[in-house]
Every structure is written in C-alpha cells, then in structure tokens.
Image (cartoon, rainbow, N blue to C red; front, side, top):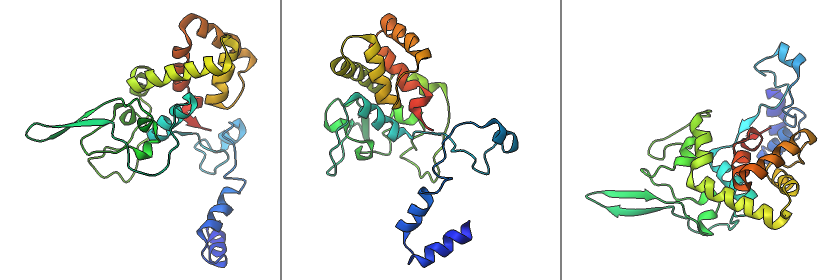
Length: 225
C-alpha cells in the first residue's frame, strides 16, 4: 500500500492535495466504527483497520462544539486572539483566568491567547498540553475530572443554560420536542423510541440545563465514531 501511494504521489507531480484525496476517498478511511464480533475475534486491537477507531474530541474542539450546539459560537475569522485572563504584577507577572462571557470570548478556541503560566481547568481536564513546555504528542485520557469539569466548570454551566434556552426558544415548551431538538443538535440524530420516554422524564424531573450537561458528558458527544 505504501509503495502504491508513493508511486501515485510521484506520478501526480508530488501533489499533496491529490495524495490526501486518494486516502480520504478510500473504503478503509470511510469505514464506520460499528463493532463486528467476528472481526474482533481475529483482530481485537484493530491493527488491520477493520473499523474506524472512535476518537475523543480534542479539548479545543470540545469547547467549540459546546459553543456551536448552544448557538453561542462566534464564527468570526482572523484578527487578534481573545484573552480570558487578567494580568497583575506582584514582583512578577501573574495571570488570573476568568470565564469570558462575550462574543469575543465565544470565538473558536484556536483564537484563545495562551500564556505559559495560564492554565485552563476545562481544557486541562481534556489533555490540552501545558503551554509552559513543548509537547510533541498529546495524551488521551479518561478520568473522573473530565466528567466533573463538564458538570461543574463555570463555562460548562453557562453554556448548558444557553443550550437549554435555545431549545426552549426554537423547539417550544414540550419536553418531547426539546429532547428531539437537543439530540438533533448534539448527536445529529433523532431520539430512539426506547430512550425518548426516559429522556423526557429526566427533563421533567431535573430541568433542561441539567439535561444539557448530561448530553455534554455523553460518549456520543465526546467522541467521533
């Protein structure tokens, strides 16, 4: 396969665009992550790529996805980055992080100004590299802190409330329609019959913002599969 791709790369005039197109249009690249028991018996670790391995969203992409489904994402391109911190001097320069609730602070995370000593609790929980050191590889972990961050971080609390407000505004006051709207936005699908009644009951008992926090914690939201 590598020999074929190398030869095709040379014959295309060393076109990187053509190489990428060749790969992403292949049957292997376009496989789903559906589990196949027979294939798993032969290749439990998926070394031969019989399915797409589910991948957790990177910290920055997760933050952007939360903003997008809540209707809060500012899609503005270019220009200076936003600063979600205040600075003060006490013999040295210090940075105090803040939850920036403004259109500028709701831009994609790629525009966030990072400082070496300015860690971000939510991004840190999802393995965003420490800005004070070089990180050639990014870790991918599963820890209780991730669930706690999506339940208790000030950004998560605020964006969950905005997501709930959007659901009420665009889907109305009926729990069934609210659940349907939220799953369409977050998962890209309709609720299944077996889960619809359970989810509606959850909304009635605990409220829509809490339901949105549960959705943000769901594997279906956190992973590409």
